[in-house]
Image (cartoon, rainbow, N blue to C red):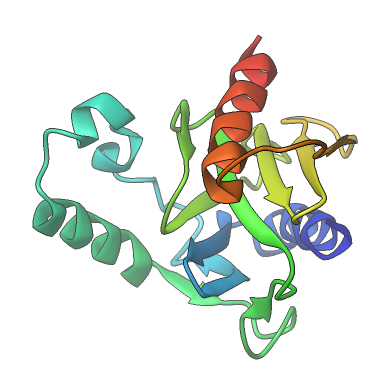
Length: 179
C-alpha cells in the first residue's frame, strides 16, 4: 500500500508539473501484478468517450473490440521514466483483488485498471483492494485532496476457496465505498 500511495502522490504532482493527464496503470492479470505511472500526449489530450463506457455496456462488446479500445488508449500514454524504469512489481504474497474508480463507476476484478490525474489537481476517486491469505486491505483515494484512508480486515475461520472469498469481499467493500 505504501508503494501505491507513493505512486498516487507522485502522479498527482506530475500531472500539475507537466500540465498533462497522468495515469496510474495497475495490472493484475494473474501472475503479472505491477503498476506504472504514464503521461498523456499533450495538455489538450481528452480521454476517449469509449473509455467512459460503463461495465454493463462494455459487456456488450466482444473481447476483440475491448482490446482494440484499450490499445488505442495505451498508445496515448508514455511511461514517466523519472518514477521508475520498469513497472513496479507488487509483492508476490499480495494480490490486487480489485480497483474501483469514480470515472468508470465499476469495480475491475481482472486484467487491470487506470486511475487518472488531471493538471487541475483533481484525480479519480478510487478504492484499491489488496489481499494476502491473512487479511484484506483497502486504500481509498479522495478526488480533490491528498487524504488517503486505509482499512484492514482480518480473514478468520474456514472461508472455503480463498480467491472466491476475496472477490466476494472486494465486491462488498466496493459497494460500501460507493455509498
